[in-house]
Length: 502
Image (cartoon, rainbow, N blue to C red):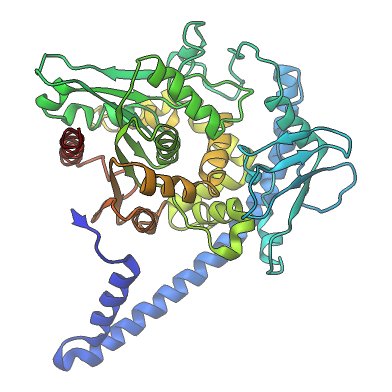
């Protein structure tokens, strides 16, 4: 474990300088080795760029082909044409389009869609423009540099699609899964009438009376994950004293795991937070609680903390997706974050996966069709090839969701929160008195460690911890007991501080 006290780029500069200088008579050899390493790195970077351009140019074409294929198959199987975001046009002033007016960064107010000069405005503060503005790699590469355009234009079909989901009258959720989604008991258990209005929540209540007052802890998982990410890792690693004192709630977010997966939801930040409120805070009458969140769940944890500043006793974030937006990119913050999260590079592999999931609506649907719909087959194959020697809870954690849920959650939470994160962190820094702890793996290739260091800079009192040789997943997997002990220490300090303040 390493407590981050210097910036990563400072450490890299120091390491490079030391390697180049060498020791005594070995300075020349050290300089030669450094030059060779720099040359190989440059060659590898250039090769990555060239291969990436070819691969993602092909994916641009493939996604358009798959768009037509899925429209035909959807109509053949479900007897209806399903709208998608491919018909969005990033042209100003296109005839018949719907203009999306983006106010200046300093101006208050949400983004607004106007279908026609006489129509009513449609509030879209929760809908990320990355859903319908995703330029191809070729057009992106040839785009002239300059400030972002103040307006965007999308086709009427996209505007009607979004308006139909926002302005729809309340109705029971559609329980029948899409043909390309899994219909197993785990993925579809929410279809029972009694479960369709609440998230699935795993509750671990104190088993024995410890004599101390019970405290509540809410665990929020990250993207394409579920509550088993917590219940199969840190929950069994807690000490008997912690299990006797803390009531722990691990939720499956809307659209993931065993929770409802409504086909007509936009999976916005508002919807996710309201479902957590309804399923946990209100249902179990939580007045004060600790929050532990991983990756995308950190955005939801911050939104909860801002909404309930007096209720949060401690805030623990793991690998938060915080990318400070440069001033010159303020007009296109969502696009900036999308390019940081999904850089359209084939290497490292996790960046390649994120890029396919974020940039290509129909390619990512194909991935979900191949992996998520058949997760039971993958689970059996994994057990067969490993001879059932390795626990397979991560298959349930990462594969039990729908494409609709993953697609909208990725864009509306990770990208759509780009303009909100600064204000959230400012509220945490200035209005919350609770302890704030942030953890990150130094080898995280999906969300770089600079994300956590930026959170620490924005919230000066935050306790920032960077684990060496750990990535986005192994920050917990493989060191469950260590991390469980860290959480227990945070909760004890928070309780002691609260007691001293009374």
